Length: 475
Image (cartoon, rainbow, N blue to C red; front, side, top):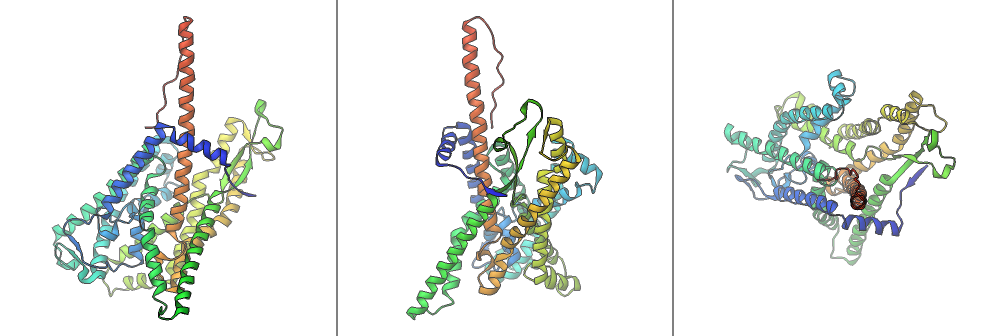
């Protein structure tokens, strides 16, 4: 039922040739790389007025924010809160537009114009989340870092004036919208999903430092004065890296696994040979990495609210003991969010009712299934069965670092599996698929234009005319 898609060496060579011989694709890749480099440079430059003298003293909440910020929080840079507030706002808008608020639902179903209106609403909702998370970051960093961090030569939140605090929050909010601009440019004129690639860039940049921290943590558990314990240390590190790459291969395998649903065409397009039937591919991990990013963004909300509450209040006590991801209940909530978002977002991605309607309009059908509502119910049933495998897999991989950290004391950001590994593997594969798709599409357009140009010259020599289509450009 599940078949990993594979490419022969000849097809791989053909695809690489299509990519590196296509100026439009190379231009889009260069543009993508340019914005990612600019974003990374902005992420490692500490803002003026802030001095970092030592460890930030961050916790799991800060690590998760740093992940969504593409690594910008670790240096208190312009992109310290990154695209996290936008992702939270996007979750809210998508939930409300799913038949909960009729005007938003109509916008979601009204094509490109409605999507643009929803995007504007999402950007507006992003602003209050930016302000709240910026304040929470400043409060948390100053609270946990002691004398290691100074903001305008001050080490506590109470010492900051209203103008100084407002300026820091304003700069952090501006960084979020600059990052969104970079993401929009990558999505529209580059390759892949811009927001996901911004997060990916921070993960990739921190891979080797994470490996170094994991190695030092493992080595510190042994007394290397004895040869046997030295050998044990080496074996422990080897096992750590072996399991890391096994998990990476598992994530790639699951991401490439699909369920093929055969599709027929009525009339002259009817195919009698079963082996030649086209099919509708549904991924085992149909929702991709989005549920993990959404769940991570939601889990930052309790800690953000905590920074606004008095330390001794009952609400603060409740959040610290039950809602933070370090607590057992918080971890369970995180896993539940990933599972629910996997079902929810895979449904949004496939949209069975609209797909069944398109099948009926175009004369396509699934063999043995009636067109219309029965096709939609069949697709929903298949999607739910796939999610019963894909959602638990995604949840276990994302929650694995917290269990590993509990058993080994390795920091969650450096433990096996987790959000970073899923984003790194899935986003890279999505970027590769997008590159191949753009290379194939633009290659076809260039080839078609050459044929039309040659035909027009031949007809011009013969005294005729031919109407050619407008050239299609990607950026």
